[in-house]
Amino acid sequence: MEVIYSEDLGETESGKHHTIELGFSTWDPTAISIRNRYDLPNGRFNPHLSSEIPLDDLHALVRVALLGLPEILRRNRQDNA
Image (cartoon, rainbow, N blue to C red; front, side):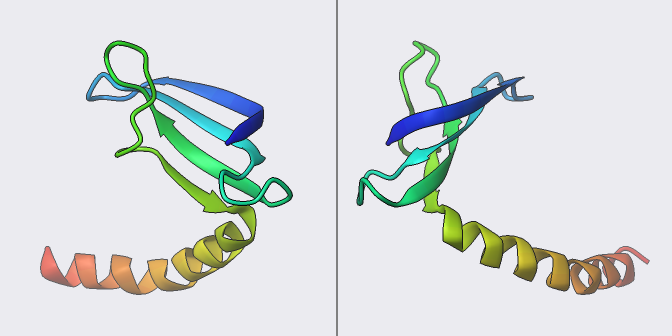
């Protein structure tokens, strides 16, 4: 991935360094992608925890998550009642 912009989110609760990266994808130099990047303790990139997705897919993921969230919260309240 050719990173054009990134935002450092610091350390996670589990001690992993977390960054969000935006740039040109690894599969198509004209496609824009976003990556949820986690580094290994030695500072190198951890490909197993760091997912890269097409930016176009992000819209669909957010839309479905927002539409489905009320149902998930409703069921969670029922299960914990």
